[in-house]
Each structure stands twice: as structure tokens, then as C-alpha cells.
Length: 382
Ligand SMILES: Cc1cc2nc3c(=O)[nH]c(=O)nc-3n(C[C@H](O)[C@H](O)[C@H](O)COP(=O)(O)O)c2cc1C
Image (cartoon, rainbow, N blue to C red; front, side, top):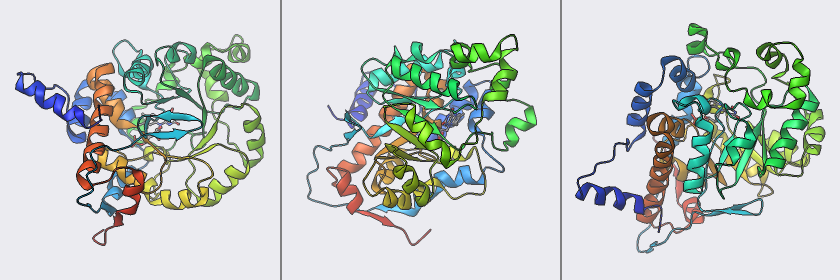
């Protein structure tokens, strides 16, 4: 069974008179999700910082790169598996942390739906601190697929330690610390409707279920307490403390400069996650893919490099792998899959991306990622 087989499943269904209800391309997926979601939630997910130039650029810069086909290779089987932190995954993609997935399904258990899809596909999810269900509940639905916990580091160190400790106890296999979001970026779509889900009391289950948070809040309502402690403008001096919180793999998300990557590795992290948060935080930046090669070079094979921002298709996945990413994060596409079809919708998006990636490797004669790297060229047209 290969990822490519999804295409034959779809054609065979067609022979039997069943045509998939799910979109087969990103543009249709995006517009179907816009119809399915409440407008304020849709604009929170679809929107980004400033005039969203960086957000668009994230996706557009993939076109700077192209793959050169190789013939008579007979790449009948492609190996897309990847081993990181002692674990082997069948594919090199993962679901990036998205704080409002809890709200995306009608029952407001979207985090659980994502976990179920991870169980079904073997594609791991990184779960955000911002969940509708507590982290202990959510991981229980991921089956044997490893899950990762993404930490928004609060200003209270005991609360940070408590969240990390809970994640470890619950069985999460790594801690992803997001560095670029101690304060939300300027997001015109949300500002123009005055909508910020957390301030309306959403996706705070990991806080309200936490003994340290409950103590901090005392008799104060949850939202003001949360707003007071949410964002910690960490500095390099905090890295030793962060490292001391866990023996699990520690991965820093938001690293875009090679010097930062080197310094983080010197500080003992186990993974570098190159991302600009999908252009939601700072406008005016380069596309993350443009920064990936330098970050990969700085990491020099010492730790895995995770990447996200702008991945929309299977060919984007392959391009990011070709530029040195160890694993590639899917963001908005799977959230739109969740909006359109719940667990089955996420599973469809994952299988669609992997089928496209696998098929293009087959057609191009690439049995593995090494062959992709050897045959990726920068185009002079862009
Ligand atoms: C609606 C939304 C919420 C997000 N929430 C989080 C979060 O809670 N934690 C985090 O580290 N990143 C968060 N991200 C960023 C994603 O992990 C990822 O970096 C981004 O979606 C990649 O960009 P793309 O979706 O355009 O490909 C969020 C992204 C979106 C779209």
C-alpha cells in the first residue's frame, strides 16, 4: 500500500458511481471551508498580519523552485518515511499547531477530531496550548500515532512547568515552544470585527484544567487572568530554564535566522522549527521557504529541521523536503479539511497531499528524498 493508491481508490469509487464529496485542490477546499465556517472564525483562520503580503508570499515562493524529472529510474516504490527523535513516521508531514481547531467542528471538539485523524493516518499532530479539550483528553484519541505538545510560555514559570509536566505525563513525545507569539500581531481582519476567540473565553481548557492556573486566578475570572499571564517575551537567558523543564525532545518554533538556529542548538534544543506562523504575526517578511535553506545549513544535520508556512499541495511538501526540511507542517489546509468534513475531511487532506507528493516522486523517478534534493533547481523566471 503506497500513498499514491489514494488516487486509484478515488477512481474506483467513481467506477462504482461514487464521486468524492471532498475538494481535490486547495482553492476549492479554501472556498468550501469559507462556506462551512461561521464568518468570524473563518476570518480568524484565513487572515494574517497587515495586508497579508507575507502570508501570500509564503505560498507564492514555492514557485521559485522546480523539480527536474529523471527517467528510467523505475521508482516503483518511494520511501517517504522519516526517523526523528528515535521514532519512525511513515511520512514526513505533520499537522501544525492551530489554536482554534477546537472550535472548527460543530461540537467544539475539533482537537479530538484532529487526534482521531492522526490515529487514522499515522501523521502526527502538534497540539496547541490553546485547546477546547484538555491535553490529557485529546491525546487519548490519537491511537498509536505519537502526539506533540506546543507550549505558549506563560509569564508564570510554575504554570509553564505544570503544562509541560502534564504533557509529559499524558504521553506527548515532544514539546514545541512557539517563540513568535508572546503578543498577537496586527491582524486587520480580526481587528475590524473586534474578534479574538481567547478573549471570548474560547480554547482555554488547558488553563482552566490546570491546578497552577486555578490557584493564580483565585477569585478573578478566567479571561483576565489568562490575558495577564499568556505572553512571555522570552530571551536567550530563558533557554536554560526552558531546557530544564523536560527530558522530552525540545523544539523551538519560529526560528528563521541561521544565527538563532545555531544559538538554539548550542543551548541544547533537539529540533529547530522554521516558520513565520503562516504570516499571522509579522507582515513585511520574506516567505519562510526563502529562509529555510540557510536555517538547514546552520543546523548542519545536528538536529531535525521542521518547516511550515505556505504549504498547500503535495508538490509544496516535496519542495520543502528538497530544500532540507526533515518534516513539513501542514497548517490551514487541514483546518479547512476539518471545517468541510470533520475527521474524514482532515484525513482526506492528509491523504491527498501525500498521494500527490508520492505520485510526483514516482513520475519524476525519485525513490527517496535524497533524489529530490539532487534534482531541485531554482528557476530563473521568478
Ligand atoms: C488559525 C490559526 C491558529 C494558529 N494557532 C497556532 C498556535 O496555537 N500555536 C502555534 O504555534 N502556531 C499556531 N498557528 C501557526 C501554525 O502552526 C503554522 O505555523 C501556520 O498555520 C503555517 O502557515 P499556513 O497555514 O499558511 O501554511 C496558527 C495558525 C492558524 C492559521
